Length: 513
Image (spheres, rainbow, N blue to C red):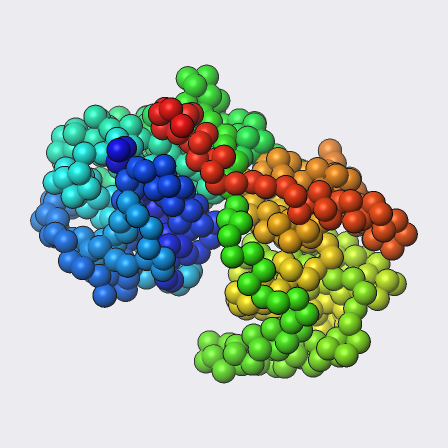
């Protein structure tokens, strides 16, 4: 039996421990490892809340800032039990819940200031737990994004943790744009302050742009035994320099990624999708679920400032209860530059889409929360356009309904390491219209399982996005056999975790699958 440790900032196998797609991966991959008869330990920070009903395991004592620190390791119950998987959280009072999903802190003045402190403490405590044998003899430690990469710094330079050199480390990149950059010196949230006794080579750790800073994303790429991108096409993208907004690639780390590739350490494996529990919602409840979600949000204190907008959305949706639109285009996503840059920079293109929908008695439904400037843009457009339904909140039931009942799922991501939304839409036979980038290239084939757009310049991309939308509407209205063929092909596509994890065993973990 092989023995694994997954170290991450999120784990959706636990209640209230997810902010994005990383949480899904950290939930699903261990389940498929357990099906192979191997053992997985999964550890995340407690964020001062997840340990409360946990089973205390051990105190972990270590040094940081020239002082003694003690953290507590707890075993916790997952939402669903699986054999051979044990879930842990690590509690220390300085690892607090942030304002993003009660996980990450948003530090606009000094990015990563609070989060770096949290993950310095977390990773050092995890290193101590490994040294103490809390997880037994480990074959593989699988790290996820910059929050866990400090373990590789400790393995390389900290004399207390040379035992980590005996274990194979795999590093998955979920979001290359968020890199965990902090100063080496002269700051409370700096490497020197937290690790005053560690002697390191700052050239091997530094950010190329800010050479007085460590780049923790780069540390993962430079020191891991295998580096994993979550789709094959994204692997190719990140080895090229970014030239935004036309192309988002290596985000200043392309040389490190090229080097990892030359050394045979960079591997692109597409994330899987969970095909169990499909269509939890019954068909026909999309409007009812919208109304239910709106009422729920209206009762939340934090949504009071949106009360007028929520009521406006409710009024709109009631019209569609009796008079159902003939076509629903939809998107479900966090409202960020990555997901909706095209609409923010070119709102006139989005208005053009709404006008095209109006002609066919269609609506556009968008569900999400996120950056204030994106929320404001979409609220403004909702007030101005009757056939744009913007549900500014989160509701699992409504999300299920949208995936189930839309006619076309829209995903114009500026870049996309893998993307899960298009897989969830496709499993319901819902064709997608996507930007031809990253994992979207690997999952949606134009005119076969959906529609895509691209272009050499920004303006060309926008034109092609509108042309692809026209093409989709035209086929839906005038060529039902082709539309049904695309729907059926989308529904047949299966991006299974079993296949992905078989590839993990072969290429990342270097075991026989």
